[in-house]
Image (cartoon, rainbow, N blue to C red; front, top):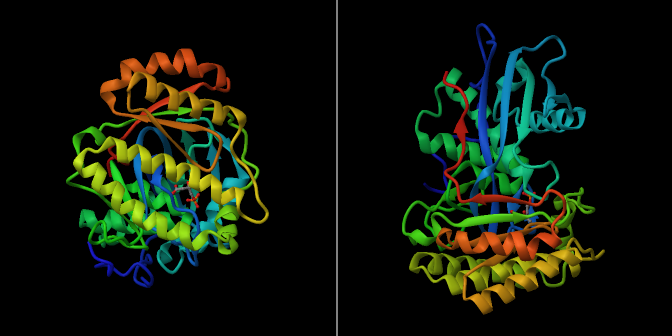
Length: 368
Ligand code: PMV
């Protein structure tokens, strides 16, 4: 892959129906992801201030069915159902997203949409539902482009464009269109990386990291008080921003080296430092804010102790919320599960935890 995509992502006036406007449907299952080196801070339009790298998850995903038919006089319409119920807020957001994509997919204006979507994980559980949701929608739109205009028949073009479109909906969603380990943002660590779309790391990773486990410990599943959009914006004036972006650029190189050689100690050191730095950026923004909860810290302390006393390489990372992602190689699962059930359970909300792991990426739900 190159930084100059082989297809023109921006301006495709030919992607418009000239004859009959079709009725049809497409559906995608797309997973969430958890960043190891975090994206926090951006430039217009959805360009990251530093590269990020994530594990795509397996069992935390969104399934989205997109039904379309010819638009009426009013032009494009979107009706959205979430978990089987009409959801006007998601409908409005999706319509705005589609409106902003009209230059890229002129056919959008010729259609009306009914979108049915559901997540396998609790809504607002602090798992990036925007990553799975936006990537599922982006894949569905690229699927329509390929079906009616046959412009994305090369698999790498299809997924590169889906990643580009997903990025415009939510930066982290760009990484969810690929399985395994995925990088978004230009970095010397991997040739072909770009700020415009994510790239999968397809070779060289030590086998220990290909089946890594992520038990998502749900401390608090309430809606977070400060959105990621606002958090990214506050980085523009954060006094530590420049050092932070430089640190992330170095961390991604060191992390990939460690993941190539199988150096779990360095992996733990970088991922935990990244998690705490993400929250340190929130605490040092103006206005400052705090998304961690007392039980987040209780769990982190137990993880440190368990690792030190039992010599088991468990570690944690955090997203923009209080829930803790407990990371470990799958060979340790039988010893980590009792740790969660016995020692960590008192700190979890009634939703408990989600037993997830690195996954293979999105899947199309139906054949054409
Ligand atoms: O994709 P956004 O705009 O919701 O930002 C997500 C940022 C983090 O989840 C905190 C980190 C990341 O890289 O996924």
